Length: 252
Image (cartoon, rainbow, N blue to C red; front, side, top):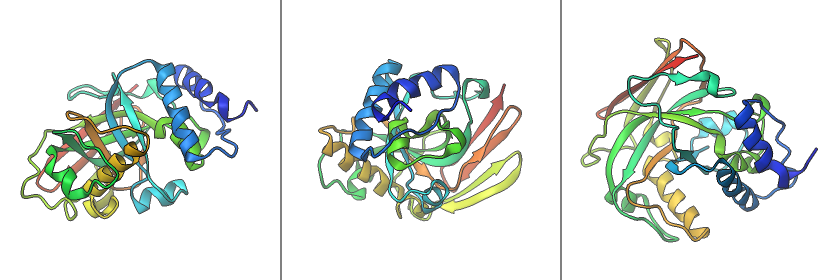
């Protein structure tokens, strides 16, 4: 085993070869894991396209056996544009989950940012499907290990933007379907009791590392339901009250 300090190189190679590895994170702390995440992003050498939050719902924490949220980044080329198919062959073990995305309209920073401040700074919300792709075999990992792996960032799809004014995202309902079958329902409160609270947690976490959330950033606020594995020929669809739907078709 090569040890935690070799994780970024091993993860970058796993992404390149589409081959899962063992999560050799040792006694890595979460703070150290974010340093390794930065190193991995540097090795991948692509601009950041969006941000994503993970492990923000009780369902997701239970599924992954962790007890706190995490954040990562979606890189250039990760968005599956409308009318195109997800290339499953470019990933190791893709799983899909429904999320609410925020389009941030002005910079957010500081140690005490609240959900109310996030909503005031939000230009629009969008229906989203996050496609996970853990580089660890069988999605077995500790919290530091998944943070180092850029929280299993893979691909994502967005629906049309909707104004946030007048919406109560806490009670906003979501229906998630896989090949026409219902696989999960939830409300926005499944994400840290309010999706904007998850984004506020993200801003406060960035502050601890001397960073801010920049205007124009799209933030996927975290899964509302447990993820489902997807493969070629599959179709997943997330339908949200009042803000619309997003569908993702999966190709080879």
